[in-house]
Image (cartoon, rainbow, N blue to C red; front, top):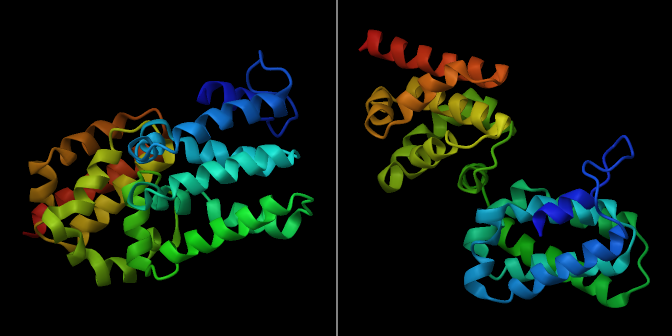
Length: 249
């Protein structure tokens, strides 16, 4: 179903990425309707995005479609996913759901009063989960989602000085989650994960031992031959930091 939805998305050049889908708005509506039905099952709602990365696709559809019924069923699906907040709120924040909701509420004039109410309710519910998040909480949410991007915290030396000790909390949970990202094929996520692990080692003298113990050091070293230039660079910088740290000690 996700493959079908991706084939309905119009590329910036104006042509669809993959041929084979006609009656695009109706196709989108019917497929998202199926996802909406699935999302009523709480156990499925907790794993749909983690397994299939559906939230970014839903956001792209909501932003690009002109059909209210498609937006309505997308919003309904996201609302159901929010019933499993621990699993889906981080992905919603990283996937741009709040910005999408603001754009829809301000930039569109909908005739469907139920849709307006659903947008307002989802915005309020999501804000309730994310409004109290600090910068560290936002960083943890991003890492937990696995969808890393170059948000300001990554490039801030002050952020790392303030929070590096917290990366060892809960049996080094954040470090282990960053290590899991090293197994993805997302160029940006890989580069950011290597960068963050480098910062961890830089500000934590014992960090290199943990990376070696959990296998992250070997993964980073392997990424020095990645096909992606940015990943190769950040992996090299991370290995350099590990070696420099070892020399200093």
